[in-house]
Image 1: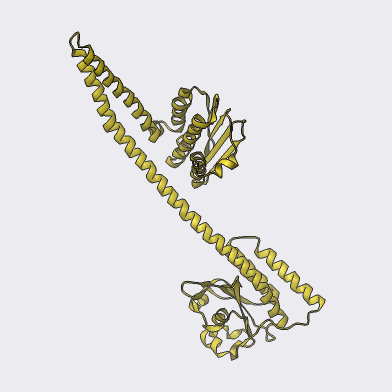
Image 2 (image 1 turned 90 degrees about the vertical axis):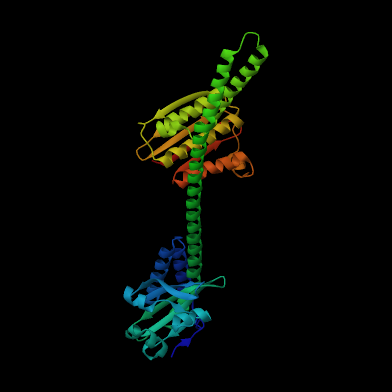
Length: 404
């Protein structure tokens, strides 16, 4: 028959205390080295089995929504056997009872334990079975099981030792699970951001195409018609001529602005000629037209990049140049597009007034702070890197690199 045991009373000699402290320290330091859940579980199980010299072991994790336990890692049992065990409900078998009661349960003779032998006859070849609940901050995380063929079973000291280290294991598992959940959320967030940015780029292309194909053509037609009317006006119709010239000039100016907007939304140069030409266009039409001197260079052998890499580096450059024009007060800017074996990068450096990166990125209510965050997210979505170096009065350096 199973017997439930609180942590057994021990003769706490100096040697025993030292052993327990050493074991606690060893397990705690070992399982806390990684936030990978499977690595943490496997390391913990190996440590515990070595401590009590067990031939069989397993860690079952608790699924809070279904209120069941399932094996995440095991030793000394075949995958077929573990699959046959399946999921255990709370209170089912010794592991289920240990989880439900949140108490260590020790069966010194499995063969005489009817509940164990009926449900898991394959374990009859073993002598003793020990099941310890894993609880952290009053939250059930799972159960740790070990079994041995040794007829002497597990000593009270061994049971006490494993029960003591179970708290350390539970904390490590909780941390690993939290990290795993965070990673899943970050992955989902990244996928969502990629979809959003993809939709944004498609919408930019659609709007740019409509502006070019419809609005631009209408304005071009208006300018030609105004010019045609001007050519047929009789001498002396100066008032009408002046009005038509204003209409023609307004159409041309609006057309120029539409072209600027179209290129800002999605420059055809990016699709037709690639990143270098598109970045050169940004420098010419934003920096030089604002009176800022530009030094532009290409490093490495230019080659076609993936659509994602090109648009990411282009948008980061666009945001950086926009910030320079709006905020930097710079006199000159150097821009380099670099092609490496497995990546591509842009370097942008200005001699403007600079800023505090910490203050700016911490002020997300500001457009500039949001812009910097967007640049960083674009790079990281492609497993790239964005670096910003800036100090008040000392200019700004922006470096972005993505796999390509």
